[in-house]
Image (cartoon, rainbow, N blue to C red; front, side, top):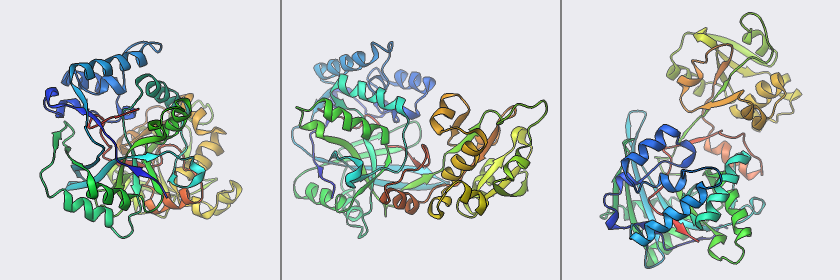
Length: 415
C-alpha cells in the first residue's frame, strides 16, 4: 500500500499579506498572458517560482534566487511541526455550487510497476526536463500532484467533512471564482486522515510529468531522505465535487493535400459508422457525445459545415488490435483510428509538428479554420481510468481533465 506522511510545509507567512493574490494555477495551464496577469497581482505571486523569467540557461537559477530571497525576507516560512493539510475548494460547475475536499501530504515515491501509485496517461518528454531542472535548482517541490483515493468505505471523506466544520487556518479567493480554505492538522487526527487515504493504491489524476520527474530527482539527490517523498493532494473518489472533463482534439490540416475542401466524412467512413447531426452548438455537441455509446466521438467539420457522430466499426477496431476494454475510451479510438490510421503518426510527433492540438472547451474544436477538423470527445469515466491503470496500461496524453485544478502557492515542500 502507498505510504503517506505528514510534513512541515513552506508557506506564505502573515507578513506576505492576503494569500489571494499570491496563488496561481498549475504551470501547465498558464500561458504568457496569464503569467503577466498573475505577476501584476503581486510581486510575490508564486508564478515567479513555478514559471520563472529568464533565458533557458538562467530561469531555473532565477527561481532559486527568488525563493531564497522570499525566505530571507520572511515572506515564506516553514511550519514548526509536520502536519497534514486539509483543503477545501468551493466552485461552480455546470451552473451549480460545488465543494471538493482533499488532504495535502507527502507520498513515498515508488516505481509505477510496484502498484502503489498508479498512472493512467502517457506523458510528453519536454515538460519532464523542465520540471526536473526547476526541482534541482530550487531543491523544493513547488506544486502538488493530484491523486484520487478509492476510499470505498468513505472514511477519508467523512473525516474531512467533520474537520471542515471548524474555522480554517487559511482562506483565499482567486479570480476564477474559486474559494480556498485550508486547515493545518497534526496528532491523531492527522494520522487518521493519512491512514484512510492510503488504504488502497492511489491514482494519479493530474501530475504524471511531476511524478516521473520526482523519481529522477530522488535518484539525483540520493543523499536526501526528503526527496524520496513527493508533495501530493489526495481527493476521495466518493467526493461529489470530483469533476472529470474531456479534452477535445484539433487537427490543423487534412491527411493529404488537395485543391478543394477535403472530404472528411467519406475518409472517416472506412473506420466509423457516421450519423449526421446537423447544426449543434459546441455545448450541445458535448452533451450529445457524452450520452452516445462508449468510445464515440463527434466530428466537427471545418468552417461549421456540420457535425457527425462517429462510432468505431468493429472490423476497424480489430484491424487496429484495439481490445474491447480500450475501444470504449474515446481518446484511444481517436489516436488509433484517426491520428494513426490517417496520418501514421504517434501523438508526440503530431503535437511537435503542430498537427495536433488540444482544447478543454468544445468551442475550440467546433471552430477549426482552414481544412483542419475538430473532434469533440466525451469524458473518460473514472472506472475506465482505474481499470486501465490496474492493468498497467496508459491512456493517451490529455485523456482526462480534472476540474478545477489544484492551485499552486498554498504550500511548498522543501527538500
